[in-house]
Length: 454
Image (cartoon, rainbow, N blue to C red; front, top):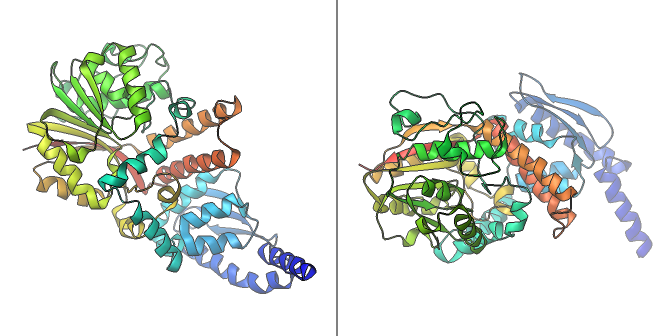
């Protein structure tokens, strides 16, 4: 029996890698799958090496991302076809496919997501299983804290090892957007002060936020402070104004707002973040003007002059969008502004995306959901919150993610993340590459927007 089992295992391996009789028999079926992929790729292409050693150029009908992929096993295609991005990650983790640089492949999939349709999404039992797990992680009040803890309570030391010194875990802004006359994207129009952070023309209100602020244009920490400055410029804060931040992270925006004279309340569900933020506020000398709370936004019963929320709404989920906007509407003074930074997905992809759970939802952000911006803007309008001066900068997020990955690898190399095993590091590298490719492919975007309460 043991000998027979050994032969069966070897047969399976020969099938998976394209060798043996079984492999030769099923290879044509997989080649037909690749033929369909070839037809449906509208832009870009893949230089592919197949398990049987043959090479194929897939796509290349129009300019776009170019990826190089080696399929070591036909099972990679099986997992992709049945379980979408979740299965594709499992195949990568098992060594069933590889690439010298997976980012262009993820960009290619995203750039062609509409043309590919459901070709790379979970189907059948896998889709139902993924959707059920995601539904069980719904961000109801009794589950939201566990979902946040699953990601953010990995430990402050973990994030400090590879984030920039401001501990800002959201997209940076590597170049200031062009000013639009009379709009809140123009700092001069909004009263927010200059945000040109070039070494020759520093803005003291921004540069003083950190003694280690990078001096060169484009440096990550400088770009993070530019992002904060642009968001605060939308609010036109005056000394003494009460600012609420929903999802305060490790406190970088709250501390900068307090430096400008605002009285800030920051909400988080992460005990790790709260502890760090309180220490950072004390070190910055603004502890008397900043309060950090472990509090759900749904429990708010106060009035504020302005509200900020940076990449927190992705942790809300469709079911709770209305509750999130209700909290903003009742907490914001009439005529007040709420400034949001959010990640949205192409509305043509949203319904298929929302029917299952993708790699990010399954492995990284339980309960997460990107925005369907048009639907969300309608919900805001129904609550008396206008949707103004949207400014998207997806490629800035791609660059942010690239720099995070470089910093992450450096942290691993110097032993700063020794408490985590290699499988965990592979997961996080994959996550950072997957997200970078998504932004480079254009199907997801990050944007700032101002909502004004009528």
